[in-house]
Amino acid sequence: MISRIRCTFDTVAAVVFLLCLAGVSVRAQEAADGPRDRTVVKQQTEANPEAAASSASSSKDVAAENEETTPNASSASTTASVSFLAPRTLPPPGEHLTPEPVTSSAQGSSDEWHFMFAPYLWLAGIKGTVGVGDVTTDVDPSASDLLDSLNFGFMGTFEARKNKFMLITDLMYLSLEKTKETTGPLFSALTAESKTFMLSPVVGYRLAEKQGASLDAIVGIRFWHTSTRLELAPRLLAGRVRESSKNWADVIAGLRGQAHLTRIFSLIGRGDFGGGGSDFTYQLFGGVGIDVSKSASLFLGYRYLDIKYTREDFLFDGAFKGPVLGAAFRF
Image (cartoon, one colour):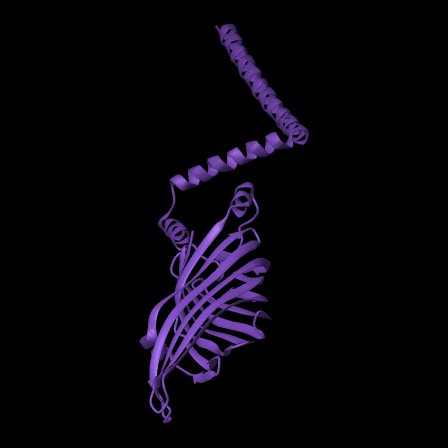
């Protein structure tokens, strides 16, 4: 009996001893495999860094998703404020008018023709001297006087532009008639009838364009047709009538420009001078433009056009001057 118990005890002790040896062996194997696995991972990372970076990114994405699934109240509030109150910046003044970056589509658009039509009203007074034959008179009607004596009038500008080149035509027609009493004893009244047609086609080239500002050089002609009829009503002397018409053309050259102050308001100006048919002529214009939309603008300014023409039996030495109000339509 005692021998059996001793045999059983020896068997149990052997089993326990074997189990202890197995545990020690497993721990030793894990300790040995750990550094070896890290060495293998390091070697794989050095051999393929992109795969390692992708694995690390995937791990970070998984960690971020786990964090987003359980946010606290304060972090949620902070995230919402950053999302809905992100700062906004507006483009600088005139940016909508600056040329777009050159791309295939933009290049195709710049090769197309662009047109502009601008009817306007020039409330011009005339100051100077008008003569037909041996009858000469000084004229100085105001803009209101011209409106009173206006029979018909039309004024407008047309422009066609492609890339940096442009064709600009300015047209004006006025038909006026005015009667005034004379102070002398010879004639009782003077009636003046005047018809003026002006056509000014010019060719332009854009010299500079930047930040909503542009400068163009222009050269062309200004053609005039004017007819004048002066009638003196009789008093001590019999009535007299003098009438004449003239045509002439002046070669002109000058500059015109535009500069946007804001996205809506801009300064516009033009100046030219020349001669040939007349002794000398020059023109100045300055004003303000208001962009109503991408295709329409209003403008208000002041225009001064001086002419000195003395030929044979016809004299006009004076200037048209006054405010200009108009609208421009682009298409």
